[in-house]
Length: 143
Image (tube, rainbow, N blue to C red):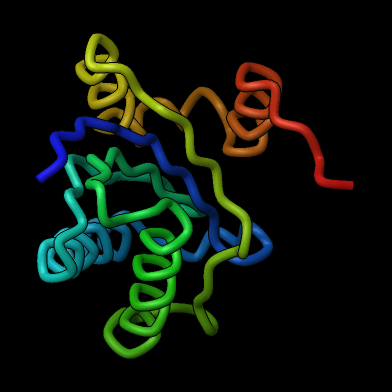
């Protein structure tokens, strides 16, 4: 049995970055994703977000990969949201997402950042946050 300790900070947005999640819907959706992740043996350590996106801290095991984790969470949660939440229109997630590694020494900081999303986005929009992710992690377009 391999011994692996790898953490990822995942961020994904609603389709067209539409602000479809009220605080209540966002909290309900996050709770559902926690339960679903547990059932699928996805080690979700934290999840939170804002009206148009979510952040998650996940411990990745040896038999998982980032794409599969994201496809499972995003696919099932959008299906569930459309059947269980009161939404102004059909709900979906964008295809793209961010995923960056998190070192053991940064877990507390990333957890705090995810916990404080409501406060954080009173000061900074998701678009601004998105641009910072692109710059800080030096992501490059596939084009």
